[in-house]
Length: 330
Image (cartoon, rainbow, N blue to C red; front, top):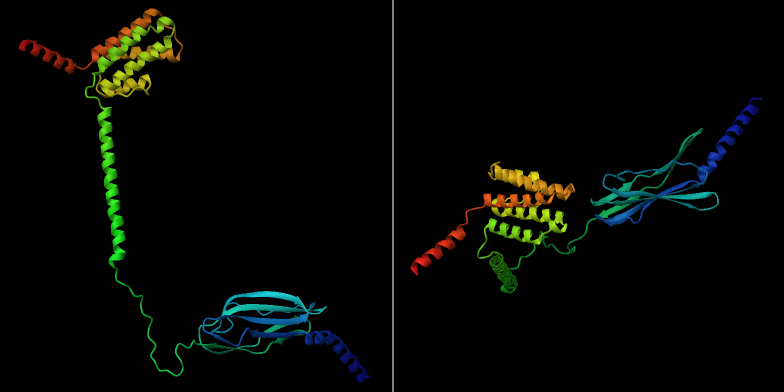
């Protein structure tokens, strides 16, 4: 009875471990370098190959920075899976490695493992050997000394190399000088053409323009807005020529404020200018229609403003003095 019971236990145990044993026999792990010998700094692959049943879940080895102390991992792993037979697969891991120390290196076996209710089982590869050799700089049958690399040779500059640069610098200097002369001459000619030999006083220009405006009879022909526009343009141009108040682009209040900043007093002439500019604003912007008497009054006020604020006509005095002297001499 006891023998029978032991036989049953043994049979159950064999049935439990049979699948694991069968699958264990179907797993193989191998590891190898592309070549067994390299020179310092060369790069090759280190490959791990696992053949296993497709339904078996193995833990695959993984390296991070190095295979050993002297063999560095540059990249990887790159993993590739291929079907061998209907129920078997091949998993391949590749690492790109290099070494900068010569010598013989032996890499320990790598393994894949599986853990289940029966325990932990590992499948190992063989050892992997790599020789890292130095580059032979001199033949083995010579004892010649190895010297350091010489610095680059600096050849002296020749006249043929310097002369083209000297010519380019000279031509550039001459060209710049000619351009500056032409610019200077152009500015001088332009200045002589633009600036008149004799500049009329501001009030002379204003009186002449006022007379032209009066003779045009604009408001008498129904062009009241154009009349006041021309009138204010004449007065504003007079302010620019006489007091250097550039009011053509300014409003009435801005014009009066700029005039006061020049030292102009808020006297009767100031009030006349203000009344002329205000009357013109009413016509141009408020569509005010003044009476004929108002048009004449605005014109007279403009004339009086120019007359009261004009600068002493030194040109006329000089001309008059010359004529007087000439008459006495005659």
